[in-house]
Length: 131
Image (cartoon, rainbow, N blue to C red; front, side, top):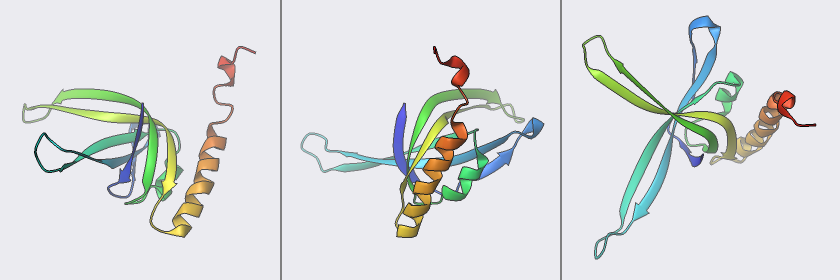
């Protein structure tokens, strides 16, 4: 699954049990439609994302940056301390493409990040190759 949207805030890196780091961020997807005989309606959908591979990417995931993320949806349900049932849907990101932001310098930095992220993952799945 692939989603394109804008960062709503700067990415946040959290360290969980065992020292593993996760980069968390939210992207907004804007859409619109026109009901029969009505005026155009604008809607925004917010997607909570988690990226587990390279916490260093967080410095490039700034508010307003346009990104395309690939990955899968995950759901989690729990009961909080007050006894209330809670649930969340998170997009577990496997790949991030930084498409740019409002400043030219940001776009140049984004291009170098894409190369770093591709290089960092290169060879990781070589054992699965049939040759």
